[in-house]
Length: 199
Ligand code: AMP
Image 1 (tube, rainbow, N blue to C red):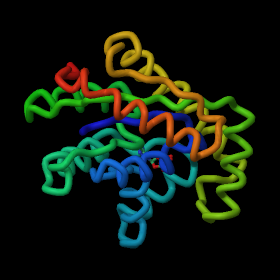
Image 2 (cartoon, rainbow, N blue to C red):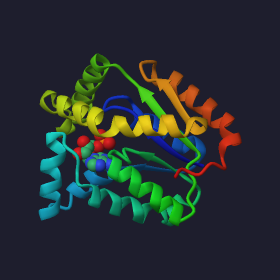
Image 3 (cartoon, helix red, strand yellow):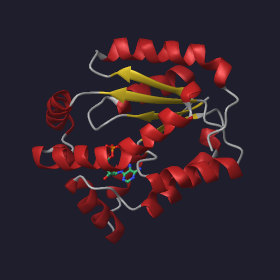
């Protein structure tokens, strides 16, 4: 099964994607995690990445498209995958659509987790204390939320309007277990739509 999960920063999409990927025994492709693992390399590119990420801005589409195109056709994605954090721009979405078409990759489900702004702020601040993520400071929250609204929300609108049969919105203000239960129900009932191709 192949899914895309959307949600503003702090919506809990990373947590949910991780749980769902282990429930379905498929790969969890978090572009944020992939990029953070590159920061340990301490070369020139990693310093540039660090600057962009700690400011709350987006890394270039070319870098992300490259990362994703290597991953999606790799062995680890054979059983399926959950895309978490990609696509994040219209350019990335178009790239993904073309790439999937060329490689006969079918997206079965698109899930969008909704959360209001105040909950987002509180959650990110709590996470920054627990995980010590540089991009979770109060200064960058605003940039990250604005970037999401400006660059990523239009993509979710596109999917919502064009792929109604495989697009689901869920309330992200509930607790982790409740959200996970809802997601599992969606996944269990999704067999009927497995043949739709995103294009
Ligand atoms: P995340 O863990 O998904 O919140 O991502 C952390 C940071 O990594 C983001 O704020 C961006 O700077 C960068 N990033 C992750 N995914 C993407 C993407 N698809 N396009 C551009 N930048 C990304």
